[in-house]
Length: 316
Image (cartoon, rainbow, N blue to C red; front, side, top):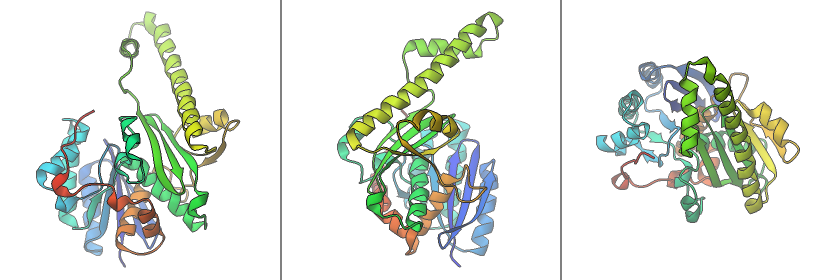
């Protein structure tokens, strides 16, 4: 039986999900690229040439890895700056494309054809590939529950310790997004206050506490402003929540929006949303069925450029 594999990478961890006919077969975690490659190699020994989709927490177009030159793979990896993560990812991408000719990178929001061109000019970050893959998993679940595309109008909010992303889903397509990452450029006073976090002098404890309090207040006010602005544009009041801050988000947003929790695939599915979505994307690229319907409706295969036109990835 054919199998599809989704791999969600963020520096220091690899979440892997395998899917057979739209049903998740297994969730697995790897701490290193070597562990991940060994695991995928074992799967390839049982299922030659599986379809594999890599999901990254940076901006990437949809791309077939075997169609890329080594230099272009290097450009992909450089999204992680010249760090050990960059080297680790490059080696992993080269290894994966040697294991299967059907290996792809999932696209981030700015490459989606469903996003109006002018919205790419509004913000530098709209949502990475991991968020797109989470939406694939969510819409696949909704379609299995017999929801129609016109019923799929909501905000998706993923709020975790590393950052926040808000996507707008309208008629089952991603039409807008705001991607915010912790540590994004802020006024100089922010950087001054942030240095207090590393100070060991007990006299600075109150100032560190004040910074943490201000940081928390900035998160909540910024999120409310973003949602209010998107509400004014899109007239949507349903919110689907994901991330560590979901309980707090429910308390703060339930009086303003109709709030729902992201539906996880079983008791062990938390944290594997992007990996599951990547696996469903992989299946949708190769086989008919619900996954293919979702992938085509989101226009993910068109969310990129030809390999020859893939631009060097800038660091922003």
